Length: 266
Image 1 (cartoon, rainbow, N blue to C red):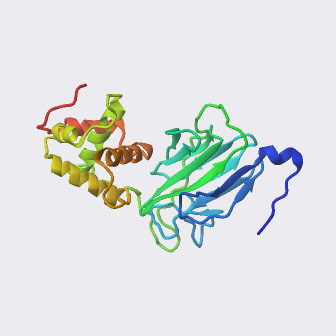
Image 2: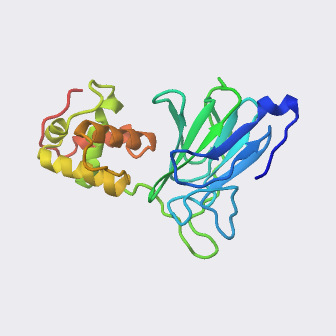
């Protein structure tokens, strides 16, 4: 076991990155002093990273991002050209920010955070503890486009999407219909499966089947014993779809194309 010693004046300026107690991803603990950076991603023979996530999971980019300490706060860079990450505030329910692709140096205003990176086999996460929350405005520092890592020198390709979706398939329209109230600011924010069925002009049994398919096959959510109710399953899908940008306001137009069912109130 290694022991890290810091001058007394620097103890309050150390950013700690460590394994997430809710994740199976193993990780060493890193202590970052101001100006230090740690890289994370799948890694590989020609792209070494400090923190390996999703070994063998091609949906995770080899050099997926970076964490940089700035003393009293930290910043994250998303070097993926096509997928969003989530930084959650572990001290406050539902507090999170979305880190868009090709974002450099986004300030994270949380003292204790969980970083979630989507993969083909589920999510990979780790924890970041900052000495103090920062009130700076969240904005990318640089518009530079990160290097694309679609293929490495061995010819191994990175999957374009962690949650691969066919936007013309019924399951995706079900997902959009579930997210519609949240995106439009309607009440209640979680529609029932019967409301989704009416919105799309399909049967409730079909909606239920698509919800189960989305959970198990697309978002890799384990259903323990089938005891979770419809509301819980819908809420999980909505949270994941909106957090990772799988569904956006732009996708709402799919609900207005060639639908025979009743429309939701505007």
